[in-house]
Every structure is written in C-alpha cells, then in structure tokens.
Length: 497
Image 1 (cartoon, rainbow, N blue to C red):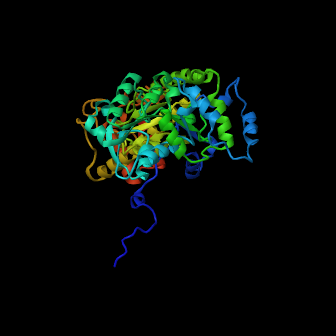
Image 2: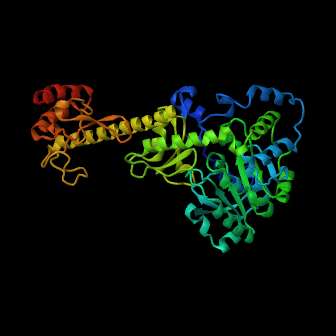
Image 3: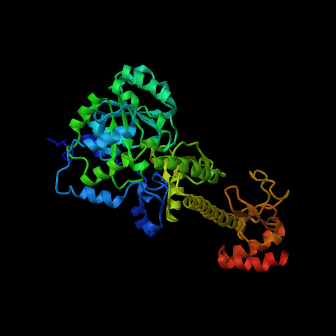
C-alpha cells in the first residue's frame, strides 16, 4: 500500500504556507547591495519619525534607568499577570477601561495569533479586506481557516448572510497600507452588525495614536463580547526592537484570552519599559504624541508634494505613511523598490499585500532631511531607468537604420509635434542627453518635483535629416558607446552648432 502521509509530521495545509513579507529588512538589504546598515534609510517600516521618547530634547524617561530597573528582576520569573502593565495600558486607552480589559502581547503578531488560536477552527471562514496587513491571513491560515477577501470599499456594505457565515472580520484602522481612517460612527454600526451575527470584529488600531486616537472604538468593548481591539507600541513609540502590544476586550473575553496566552509572553525588560511608556503624562495626548502627530502632518504634506509628480499619485493619508499609485509610471513597484534599495533607500512594494498588483508603493514619513533624500532618490532612479530605456531604444533604432536608413517622421508619437513638422525621429532619445549645451536650444528648467532638469524641448538639431545621416554614419560603423558618442559630438554636432 502506498504511504499517503505527508513528508513532515505537521498539519497538511501548513506544507504550502508562505510567510508574510514585511518592511524593515535593513540587514538583508545591506548584505544584498553591500551598503553599510548605517547608510540605509528605511522608509519601508512605518515608525514614528520623531524617534523614541528617549530621543527627545527633554525626555520624560531615561532609558538606562529603565533598563537597570528591569534587569533587577533578571533572576526572577515575571509575574505573568502583568498587572502594572495592564493597568498602564488601560489608563493609556482611557474610555473606562480597567486592567481586566487588557491582554498583554509580545507585539501585534502574537496577539493576532492568540485570538486566532482561541476562536478559529479548521474550515472557519475569516473575512479580510484587501489590501491590508498580511498577518491576519497568515495567523488564521495556521489554524486552517478559509480566507474570504473583500474590498476595503465594501466593509460597511456587507450582507448579514456573509457576516453570519464568518467567524472573524478584520478591520485595520487606520488601514495599512492605504492610510485611510474610518470614523468611529461607522465603526460603531459595524460593531453592532457583527455582534448581531455573532461575528467577531477585530479592529487593529496599531497606528491610531499617530492619527486620531479619539476615533478609537475601545469604549464599546465592555458591552460587546464580539469586539476586539488591538494596539501596538511599536509604531507609536518607534520601538520595533521591543516587541510590545496589547489587546482590549470585554472583561469576560479578555479573561479567557489571558488564561490561554503563553504564560510568560513578556520579559522583565520589555515589561518595565513598556509600562513606563504607557504611563507617560497625558497618555495618548502626551506632549510626545501630540508633537509626533503635528510633526507627521507637516512632513506628510511635504513628502506628498514631492511625490506628486508625473507617474506618482499619492493617496490622502491620516497617518505616518503614504500609499502611492504608480500605475502611470512605466516602472512597476517591484522594480522601483529594488532600484531604490540599491541606492540605500527602502520603500514598501505593496504587491505583497494580498497580491495587490505592482502598481502601488508605501513610503513612510521620515524627517525633513530624510524625506528630501527619498524624493531625490526617486528622481535619480527614474532618471537612470529612463536612460536605460532610451539606450535600449537607441540601439534598436540604430540597428534598424543600418538596414533601412532613417526612421522618418512619427506623427503618431504622443509628444508630436514636440519640435517641428517633418522631423526625423531616429534619435527621439538623444544619445547626447543631457548635453547641457545651450547652443542646441536646450535649457535647464524647474522640475515639478523640485530642483532643475535639462530640457530638450527647443532642440531641433538631432531631428534634422542631414544631421541624422551624419550621426548614423558614425554609430552604424562603430556602434553606440562612449567613444563613438564623443566622436559624433565632435565631428557632427560641433560643426553644426
């Protein structure tokens, strides 16, 4: 008899499971491109651009003191009730929460996994709007869930029958990667609808402190056992190295989740630091977070203006990242992200969000200097890519011209008549660009994205038939290379300028 068992002693459906793609791959990029980690600008991970509270000019907290305090408990098991942390989290959220509503977690992913473990059975339907955070589907897939995707625009128009069929509906608010925030009035109605159909509404508010914390719906949990709120310290306090977060649920739901979670899911150092951060004066409206939101709004406007250029359509955002449509750019998101990374700037290719296609990127808001570097690198990458495409087209045109002669006028060109009627288009992509010689009619102009760029709009010479014939005599005989370009400029262009 043939052995039909899987090759590994795991659940069969796990054999085809793929891990999530995340941003923040600084070390991997450093190794791939040979760039020192310290020289890499990470705009792929969306952290508070103001830095940690410990980095502020007048910090309320001292990191070394907190480390020393945490390490005093190094030889003890943590008190796995985590009462101080849960109390601090409840006061941070406000809205009538107590420690009994809080479930501590080792970052967002552990909290998602905990809820999935406690709620989802193999075959259960889970609803995931797309595009959104990929950990929802991964953690539910580990439990054997049947994932059903819906569109972000359909979240508030779901039929009761579809909700009744589902065990959980995930809503990221503000949404990652689009940066859209749903107002609490809409979320209230959705929570009521889900509860009526006995469907858990999992609301991920990981970024809400950096957007509009007053739009949280945490105040609804005590009267709704089908509502779960997730919060993260990673984004708001810029501490991805300390895996800290928490869930908010009714005291009855939270009790079950606390009984089921890993016994010691927080260490003494992370417990101490996170408790102190959540206890900062003012909570979600501490000076640090108020300053952060103001800084993000200012820099978001600046970066959006820089990215609003031909081929880039940034979407309105309420948070510390921008979702950019590059459909009109001939370069796709994967290649753009790769080329940016080769220059030491990481952005997020949004193709990894539920196979979102290759027309969107996500760019984190950073400091002014870093945002200028992002914009400059985008400009440089597009210029380099355009040069490569132009060179490829030139080689092809010269190859054809060697057999058929000049290309002639192209009246179907999108840019015709950019120069003059009857122009020859063999050198539509000029081999001398940017020549920076004003005698040609070219000149420096202001770029829509800032800075100056060389414009050939008023240059006619490389489209005149005699000039084209003379240039071809050089390039057909010697090929298109640096030496032949220098020779063609000297022997043809200089004599006719």
